[in-house]
Amino acid sequence: MRLIIMGPPGAGKGTQAKFVADHFKIPAISTGDIFRANVTKGTELGVKAKEYMDAGDYVPDEVTNLMVRDRIDEPDAESGFLLDGYPRTLAQVEELDGMITFTGHKLDAVLVLTVDQDEIVERLLQRSEVEGRADDTEDVIRKRQELYVEQTEPLIEVYRARGILIELDGMGEVDEVTQRIFDALDVWPQS
Image (cartoon, rainbow, N blue to C red; front, side, top):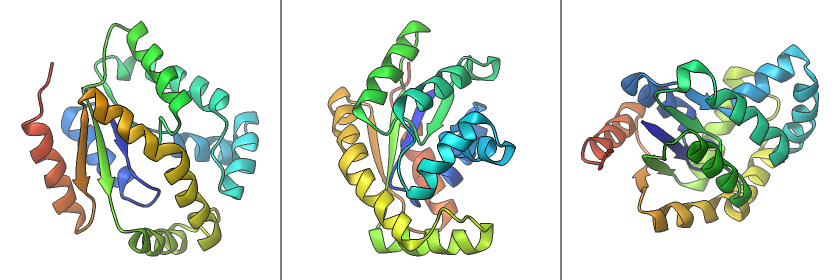
């Protein structure tokens, strides 16, 4: 199973990605987690990524694409994966298409969690307090929302046109959203 989970920052993608990945026994690959790990380790990539993350900007495609390519080439991703936070731009969609086609596979489905914008701001501000994430200030959150609308929302139409888009209500308790995802995937055509 090769999946993408999408939605604006704070929609619950990371939380749901873990449940879905565990269910299908595939790795959840989060660009955000990979960037934060590199920042913590002080790697060259981490230093570059931190500049963009702190400003609320997306890390440039060339850095992100290489990182994702390396990650989906790892042995644990041979039978599938769930991408969280990638692709974010039309150029990344094309790059991912090439990566997956090269392996002889295809995407099975793209999950999109929809949530209320004010709910997102509230969720991210709470997460910032609990996890001590300095990159989650209200200004940065609002900027990420704008970037999502400008750069990432157009991807929804690309995947809708391909017939692999599943839109789900991301509001409610975590277990309710998880059940919606499993219910949708249970009836989803699989190859």
